[in-house]
Image (cartoon, rainbow, N blue to C red; front, side, top):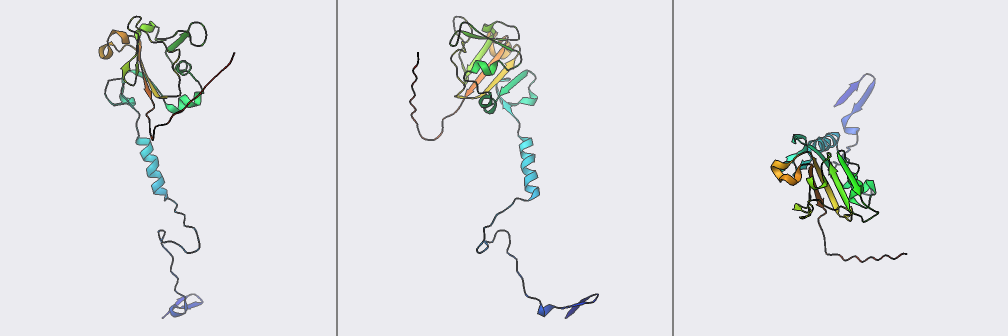
Length: 193
């Protein structure tokens, strides 16, 4: 059995049998590297685009941020870490519609005013627990650090129908990091003059 292509003549019996290993078979004396196909890479991109940011603060139920009718800002863990701010008040200063004031120096009373309202008209939650003062109605942000914060949801504008009269300026929901792994103990100390 001969195959002719112009002037070249090949005989099938004279050609050596060559078998190529499949992509999943191990190859002797060489490292096997599996490279994802282009279709698999585009599927990952499509999945990442389909992931929506979910907020709870706006309606007290899980809802996509694009479906919320109110003005809402979400400050993520990455944004907090990139800000290099040790205190949460420094992070909140960069959010539109919020004015942060602090009396005296570090550790002085720190108040937040949303959309020109009184500091008592901003309702603050930490992990779903209301932390506003019972007597003054406001929350002192002076000593709240960023090292344990996972995310902050800031809902601007009147939210009295969902949260009562304390939320006339807006709502700030601070979500802390969840523990994982085994229990760890950390000890630190400072000194100075």
